[in-house]
Every structure is written in structure tokens, then in C-alpha cells.
Image 1: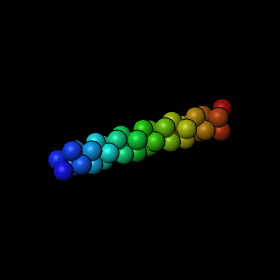
Image 2: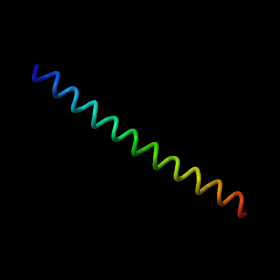
Image 3: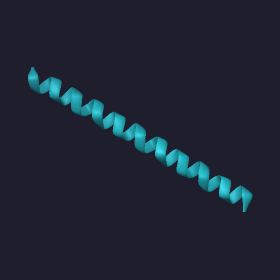
Length: 39
């Protein structure tokens, strides 16, 4: 039972990490596009 809770917490942390990475990647892509449009 304790193990299940630990796994759930790990899973939540992974999800947050992935969401943050995706957000950062999206921002980078938008910046690249803006440079291409302006350039």
C-alpha cells in the first residue's frame, strides 16, 4: 500500500516534468518561428 502511494507520487512528478519540458519546447519553437518570419 505504501509502495502504491510512492509510485503515484513518482508518476505525478514525472507528469509535471514532462509538462514543463513540453512548455519549454513550445516556447523555443515559437521563438524560432518568429526569427524565421522576421528574418
